[in-house]
Length: 281
Image (cartoon, rainbow, N blue to C red; front, side, top):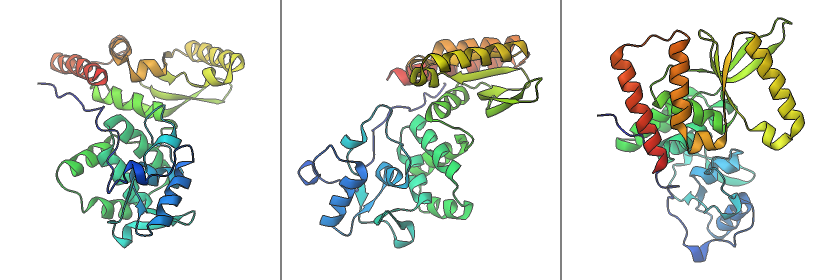
């Protein structure tokens, strides 16, 4: 039986959460709200998504207003796992990475791990942060770190890569370099150089308007002239409707030379359905 990945779980694991009455008024930056909490209780250390935010990483659920996100803090972290950022005590980058990897829903966890690893985390510090974990938290953290890749440049790239992997398709290369005849390089969000297939997340045109759309079209034509076929995805595709584009990618890979066994194809088909079902939950 194909196991259905758990993409949507509890939105956060709050250690020693403050009650609503104790929280500062919403509307302020998450860092400032934690500062208020810390000034009322100097034993508190920012953890989880709050710690990530203070470190400079946005790992909140997509579409979440950070001014309304509940503060995550604890008085328990060992001193060795605490550092100071902007004058506030937070879990170290390695501990914050491990907490996100273990406690966030899978897609958000992988995107968070990609971001934090891209900033640089020492392997020894990461190993030390993983050491106290056991059971389900250790399993989830290890699965997240195995799926992570610091080359990803946006959370949606991370989500897309994770869904492709969970569907059982060949692993794409993040930020794949494609050289044009002029010698200049173009980069695909994800791609398979062997089969000249790319995947692009269409987020920039929405924000930058017609100029970006024109540039994207030129880039698309250039890639097509070089023999590449590119699947362009939107946020809705990635977050709500993965089945159609995963099926298109499967068929495109097969047409371009991917040669899995009958059992592998059966597994891929089952996993695509499981991925689609998981995102609908």
